[in-house]
Image (tube, rainbow, N blue to C red; front, side, top):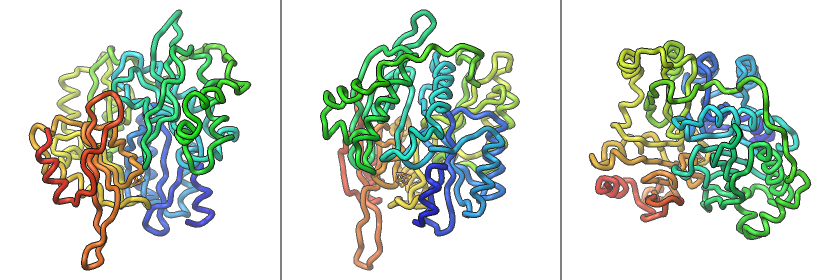
Length: 431
Ligand code: SF4
């Protein structure tokens, strides 16, 4: 990779495995985007790329196939639409995620995600970190997503109109998955930014690149890491509660019906995204949500005739068909990603055909390398292309590890080094 290409990272740009082409990631706080902004993303993809948009498990959008000369123009178009890509890749605080879109407290979570994104994005104090720094906010601990963040916030109460959060830190997937540990309980909202800042300062001062915070938890132990964080001068500060008009785009979920549009492997064409944006204008007050399963959710307004809207929305795009009714998270794999070992979308299609009827009710995730971007250790069944093997004719083919999750923690590897044919046989037996 050229020095120039590596300098693009903090602007959310990675080189693709195809020479001369780049991926631009766009940070969406808690996965929320307006219909107008979604149209901008669709039009950028059509004008500068190949009209392809990828939805990520962290609620971001990625535009692939961008030539290098288009990157400044892409950045300008995103900025005009009020979208940011700063810190979407590289050693920075990444997009603030939320997998609890349907929860009652979601609008407040979205508002907090926007405030955290505003605070940490483009702030030189929180850039050029040893590696990425991930923050996620959840309405409950049920999905386990708080366990895979550098800082995971779980809504734990509301007193006098102010929310409090349990704070989990030092989690992460990748080659060495490690669940986060409970750092403190019921932290009031005004202490969140100081505590997160203290965590980042300890991380920046102690972790050698390219290690994540979880490395410090392993090296120092949880107790010593806790003491280092608590010793930071910023740790005890309080930032007064935010007052003023609401920041969030979403309304409380109980005000209407929620519709999820399945998107196979998180892949949309620009035309499909434009169609969805038009539907959002019509039915969900111009707001779309990118879900943790790489689908799109619309929350229908209370004034909307739900039966008519749902009939209309079900006809929208044919993107779900290839998934065969399965919920399956899929990363770009070696279709575009430099790290990819397997053609994930092709494998996903074969998996979808092989999965038993009972297996279709499970949540699946497939990652093209051990970086685990599709979060396979949080799915009911996770599949990771973990290595390549060389055949007699010198051809390299991927081998797969299989994970199962049954409890509240991360999924465990139950089978490893499976060739594709064996993987397909195994998944056909799973229920
Ligand atoms: S899991 Fe690996 S192959 Fe898939 S997107 Fe992440 S880095 Fe790329």
